[in-house]
Amino acid sequence: MAERSSSGRKLALVLVGLGTFLLAIALLVPTYTVGKLKKTPLDLEVTTVAEGTGDILNSKALLSGKAQVDTNVPIVAQRFVTVEDPSDADIMTLQAGQTVRRLDMQGDTGLVSAIVDRLTIDRVTSMPVSKEEYPNRVSTVQTSATAPPTEIDNRDGLQYKFPFDVEQRNYPYYDLNARENYDVEYQGEEEISGVDVYHFRHTVDPVDLSKADPTNPSYKLSLPASTWGVEGDGPITMVRWYTNVRDLWVDPVTGVVIKGQEQQYQYYAREADKPEVTVLKVTLPFDQDTVEYQVGQAKDGQDTLSTFGRTVPIILGILGALSLIAGIVLGLRGGKGGTPAAAAGGPAPAGPAATTPSGPAHAAPAQRDWTTDDTQVIPRTEAEQNPPQQRDWTTDATQEIPTTDLRKPPTDK
Image 1 (tube, rainbow, N blue to C red):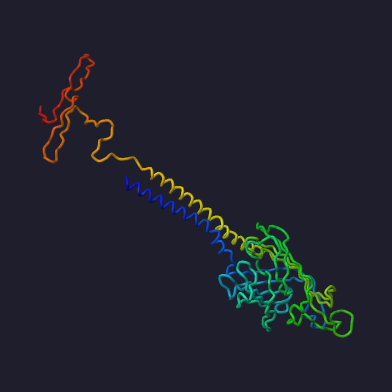
Image 2: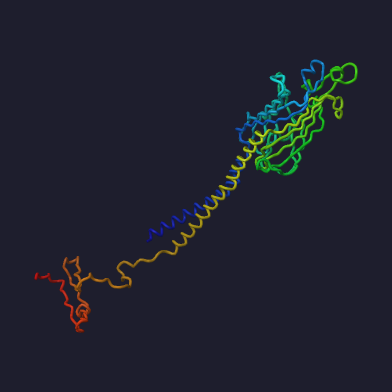
């Protein structure tokens, strides 16, 4: 019994220890593990496609001496984002190759623009990191295969992803064409393919692209008035202006941009508020395949965060509580002790006397004295001296039942 009680106490201690451990892990998982998961993965690889129909300047015709604008042209904007070095546990460098093409022309003649953007961001906030904090960080834009990348020092806004746990407020956003930071304003909550999203929007007022990027010669052109299709003699110098209305629908949990849309308008003009020759006028929303892919990315991220932020802690908490309660209950029961056994050599517990084997024999069995190797006879009790009488119900007479002496061997009859 003592060994059983000791084993019970040991099991109770094990259960209490296990329960305490599980409860501690349940508290640590949401704060530690989820914090580790709220980082943009280093294997990020995303392709987004936006399509629309719009008006576009025919560059080939312009070189021939006529500013011809083609209408109802199918246009596609494609962006491919990958992760490059430097990247580590805290930062990551994104490389985004972006092209705009007109689909009614093949090969290079259909290419409207091509940009390679590289920037180093914080993996949690998605904001560009400073050169002071990370001297090897990257922030460049390349618009020509024959020209080196241009360093950008004023990039202080979001671009390709929002931070985790998006708030209902305005965020700084960097426009790559304007080379400026703008506030993207919170518009409200919506739903896309079963995912609750936050809608953001910002408007870019006319920007002189020749000042935003002086290295691009097409942003400021001097051509004959006849080429521009305007009145005047001699060359007329026009600059390229850019405006945009950008809409973003963002998953508030992961910061994934579920859907994006741009209403771009680029034109040549001598004054910002007087467009003269359209370069590009188109609305480009993400296509359905891109939206569905981004929805899947957001849901995967949500499921992972929910598993470690809620499901796992709840399961561990329940198991820990049950283990702790079982250990306490078992410990209390073990402390009270079990039923005490009779002391060695003490009197036997009270109860009915053992009966002899069935049959007519009533003599007490001999008890062996192992110290003398002699057999001792246990004296008969009074009940044995005077055996009970059996009633003969046929004669109503009392008969005496003979007693057999177990000490004598039976005789053959």
